[in-house]
Length: 458
Image (cartoon, rainbow, N blue to C red):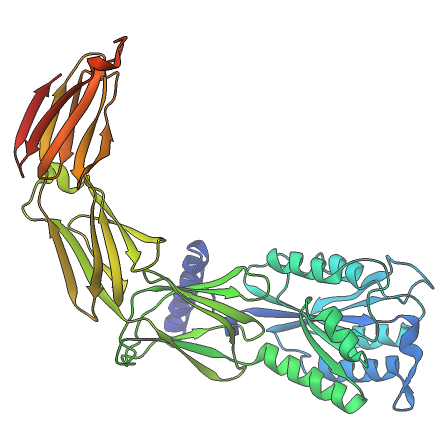
């Protein structure tokens, strides 16, 4: 009986995983395979002494000690790429010495024993070639840790290569450990990834361990969307986490509350810094968020919202679905939304300008959207004007003070036009298309009432 239950449970789990993959469901970070690629500098300068020992010897010892921690771990596969070790002076000197495996320690140890510093520093080339080291697997995390005691020496741009590969999702933002590079190294490598400068073996080991801990720690993020009372009551809105370095989209989550009524916790990779966009209307943007590895992070975002609804004073099914309105923040010319009539929609709390795309247009300023309340705006329903004509050019004008404002230009090839106009007084100014004198212009004044129809023959 127990075997049958376990057998059934196994197939349920397989079915769920298969369904998630088919529908592109996000796999939590702690369930993904992590591939760690160590890229080791074996240029000639690595023979220089550090704490009385060659830098290469120190790097080998610490790298082996770190790699040993993952031996046999099915969730972590380690690989080793080396550059500057095959030729005295060659800008294409880089090789994947050990491919990814959960049991790669003995291979790494053997290869490190064979490596001798001798060449130059083709960092860009090594990075570029590393793109082929990682298998194509959307459900893995690819991490690069570069160890170097020098800068790029082959007239290439490692920052450009790194950024291009990150945008292609080949690997996440790399970690660079500079051995005694100081300010010069920081300036050269900060555009490539996260740079650490170490000045002795003890610091090197400490930084290396911290990077690995950050890479593999179980990290969660909770986003609290705050109302005007600073309470996390807002929900049901999409959130996009962008890699702050490469500007690429990394996560999309629709905010919700868990069974305890709290903002649901998300599994977010702590390797990256993020720009967060809350897709309210208008959106709320938080840049350069730093996620603390191994912790339950809480991000608080002010996103108080209320509702706006637009309608005509009386229902007219022939018109309601044809009129739209432009929504802008008060004092800002940028349109934040286009809203249909009789649709209730959420907006951030604040003052807005609403422009109904009626004829003529109706603009309402300083419209207030309040927390959890619905602001309803209504305008008079239009009337219908039908213009019968033949080879006539002309326009409809409305009087604004002492001036005439053109609100509609008639279609000169149409013999019949029906136009929805707001209640008010108007004037048609037109003439026969082929008339040879401007004095053939005619003027007709008329008045439109809500819900009524009027026919004019020109």
